[in-house]
Length: 217
Length: 217
DNA sequence: TAGATTGTTAATCGATTAACAATC
DNA sequence: TAGATTGTTAATCGATTAACAATC
Image (tube, chains in turn yellow, orange, purple, cyan):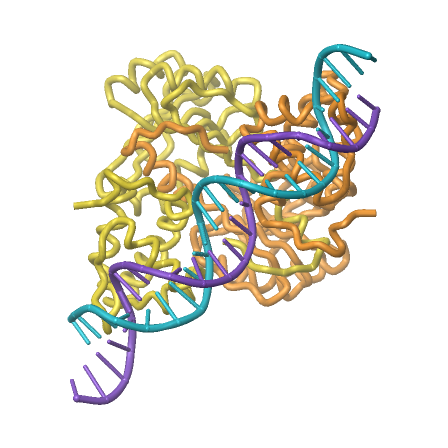
């Protein structure tokens, strides 16, 4: 039984779990079956003690003297994150960025499938990206309800960002990834994640001038 | 004189500065000239005391009883981050993602200009994205040296990620933004930043199941 | 068994926040 | 002057790390 129900898990732990998972899946793909916290620490640039500490928040799934069974650990982390079952995604905006996201192989690997794509450009509506037909924006609410979609990706021009966000939230979406540089508001109960390449550039830029040259993950 | 020369600045501070900058530029665009830490805190979801504390690492540029002059603060933060002058970017990969990045307006606003684009698809070479002509990958080293480019963006298929990263680093690039899901290695002295939409999705996913519904920035 | 590595405690370290005197 | 808000100290809080007994 996960302890997660009773205990508050530090934000930092939740941020590191996907990184562990990524490496573990990669190792599993390479046919490795067991990994120590020392080795995992090397690969993720995280202190081994920290990895062990992080995992104990959810139970203890290692073997002393041996390490962690990779297959088991992958499953456990996926379960903790909620990545142990498929998730449908709605993508709004079928431009270059939207197309790139829809075609991103990494999504499928983790059980994410884009099952609805919207755009308001008449030239795009009816066209397909992969197996999905681009729908007009008007159909957003109905389609999301029908497919019971909880995750939305906003990849539209800045002007439309807030409006699209509002509509997604109103249609029952609980997690919104915002790929526009606009600061959008979301109602209580909706988790917003902003991805702004510039923000990230500015951040790394600091280290460019200071010459601290540390690798960031 | 910045104190940054002598003091170690916490990572968290450097992460928040771009967020402040973003809001400040937006406020400036709206014609606002002054902002208090309380107001800025509201807009960035950061504790006002924290904002003041963060800024004192670099000096004191507020006026008691008044707040911060936005124009001054923008300039100071830009200077701290190294965003007070133009930066040339090299983009490798002219697919959907590359095109999206090249066309991203936010870059220009902060003084970033993509001045070189590379791809190895003969169908793309010679074509243009904006004002930049797509060059063959072979010309990477020479062009980067000639333009003295320090920042590179990797937006190629996974298989090519490590190779492109190596070549960028060898050609003198100091900051690499990796948009592939591959974990690439960089030599000492090169700052790497990975942007993996899946990693971010997995992270927010945790909150989807736990129903903690907090907005992330 | 001997060697290895976990799980966990305790110590350290650093970051966040509250509070308030300084001062615009 | 009175009101507002900074800059800064001190207190709190939490996260990271070292260390080691437990145990595979």
